[in-house]
Length: 374
View 1: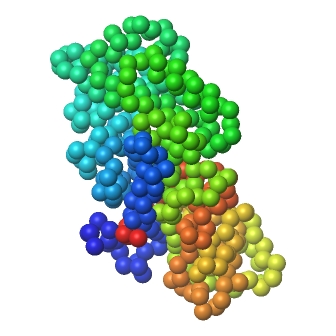
View 2: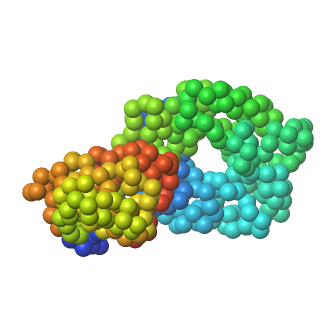
View 3: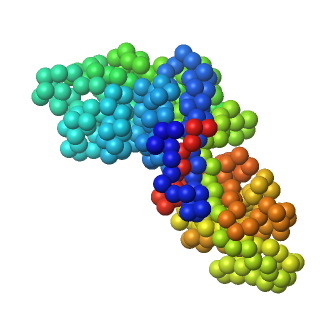
């Protein structure tokens, strides 16, 4: 096995752990290719590859055939360039003031989000007397970043002059409600995107991320940018998940404790046992990504048995009611699944009152990442 896939700690030394199944990650990339054909697939590896580890994840995806990647920040792009010297890397933040030379020196392709950025990148190209690749982001309804239709219309016939020195590698936009497949806004944004393409020089186009892929061929264009689906999340919760589980978040039982009816647990004495109860204290807490909001509705799993939370999740520890787990299956050192095959990513996010993306990117840095080929 590749040395990258091994953990420096033995199982008995690990407390909280995120097991990342690189084989499933690669399979999800191939599934995205299948679902998006004939469009190209460019994985999004921002935020430390959605919390799963930029190095192992990007190598696994490159080995599976990915030749184009997206990151958010320039520093993410620099880190990725050190790992992948030949792949194209788009930086979604584009050019912050004065960073154009640094982007160029690391062979990073900026996603230009404003006329000011276009002017700065074009000026750098003219000074170097060569064409520089860039993507242009047009806003079709998110109202966060990108050129508005009014900006594009104002430039009008001068757009080719504004883009002097720039080789347009991609025109992209981003859907606001792609995970709600029946929303009219998806079709409004599609129409706006097509109108924007008509104003720009011919170039490959990209509108969809993981959820947009599921909206149909009209939304695929030349390239898609999946993130969540690659990491095993369900892009459309109203449908069955077509992707494999990639991340398994687990902890280990530190101790078992029997309490009586009326005993309370945790900060604020927020849990009161209604009957004699067996509790398991687990070495994982909100510093590890288990949000405090999970406890009232959430559940973990031990050996396939669901176990409810008992009291508030604290910074380092979580207490679970394991009364209904067969005694031979729970002891000091027993593994507890917080997210994985039994408790899905979607269930954990729902219990926390948030989205799957936030769950993944909130998994703390002290949680050991362990990589397997599965």
